Image 1 (cartoon, rainbow over the protein chains, first blue to last red):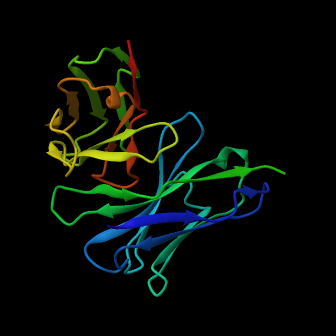
Image 2 (tube, helix red, strand yellow; image 1 turned 45 degrees about the horizontal axis):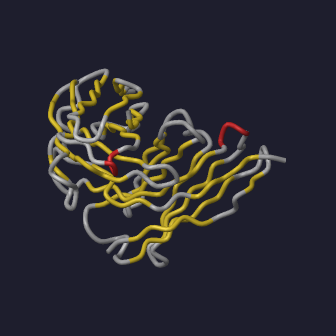
Length: 123
Length: 107
């Protein structure tokens, strides 16, 4: 059973960089036709797709965040990471990591999610 | 970017009711439409993928239909554990996007 677990600071100061890591267990991050995503959710609001990475290193980012976001992968540690720079209070949210499954033509979905981690931006 | 619009935003229903939630894409997304259920304090859970395929382990009272721009999620007979928020998501193109959510409440 694949499991994902987010980790990182729960409090980040404004203008600093938010850094989170997602550790994948129960399977190799490099196996299969999967990609690895970050999604966030401000309190009481909906879900926002941040971006994704394939283990080839190919990335896609949400244009609304693109200038501030970097997603990377470390296959040796079975982890992928998120860095979001120049944060403000608007970046306060629960951050989820998730596995994207696009094995089959016409199908692309998130089948495994981490439990989420709350990151608060405050001085 | 493709925008996803769900309706209604909230819905009150009773146990045993049949419920339908609608999701509309701002342009055609073929069948690249997924539905998730989220309960308070929990991560979203995949219910339906590729518009109409039931995820393994999800009860058969959940079903999805549609293609192109218009999609529906139907719960045939509401159970107490179904009261939650439901999100549609398009994976046709990046940036992927979610609908704003439909909160399903007990009447």
